Image (cartoon, rainbow, N blue to C red):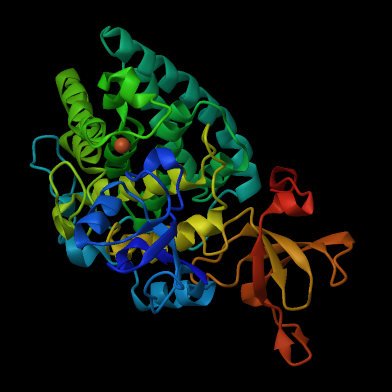
Length: 431
Ligand SMILES: [Fe+2]
């Protein structure tokens, strides 16, 4: 029997049937392998692999597989461990350029209202132009960096200001927009998407606008140092050797140097770049920081970076469905991510993310059009197919959190999740 498990559950004696990643991204000759030592497991972790498929007939078994992590387990895990950055970060205050970087000073008592002033659909329309303009400007910024001409941060900085305004108008709109359409050119879209997702989480955490600016600027430039990685490594079609991977791992330090030389970014923004590949369990790079040693803003960027990387289409593979990425990240809480922050992130994007298709216990199928952060298992669903799975004539939004209709003694609830493409649905037509 084949089981998909979190890498943190790997033990010597297990037989890996599939590394769950392109062969380019793992260190072994084949994707099948009997694990013989803890060192091999550490190597797999170093490559950032989060899950593998094991064959329990050819090696030892594990207690819990990723498939056992159903939505209710994730939701109850999050409600048991509510995000509490304030407790960790200490007193609130104003950010300061001169003050040594401390997560503590970045939090503020900014209230996060229960509802957003602008509806999701309208803000998605508003933010579309900002997103496209940011993409254009980040592309020309990266080209400037490659040509080693003096960098002009002004336009991108103005874009980040506009994105901050957008997450204040509606906290889900920009993050939903970036996942509705497959944009080309991963390098540029990834930079902007990581910025959008970081700001979305920062907004939900109640960070001040000044702190969001540090976060947004750090996030949008987090991988800039990749321009200094030799092209034959950065664009290598095959697997990186260990030596090449060591070179690739220099990019956070290179980014920090580039940005520091420009003298345009705050120390808080620089920390995002330097520490976005640190892991909560201490196995990240470049410094091997652990837990709360990793600056808060860098922990936020790290979550956004992995979520976007997992869910974006690449040349060699299609992006993963949003809910599958949530599941994998949840399976790697504590090893990779601050579990409290991950809980808040999942509250932002949802256990059933906006633009997922869900099947209800009635047989009806619909599109998730909004989430209820306090009731993650009960989003708002636009019903598109009836209980016989025929298209409905009158489309209706059900807020499952307020669903009172009792059907045979039960209220409506979600029993399965799917991707819209399988139903011939383009979510952009409905959101
Ligand atoms: Fe990176």
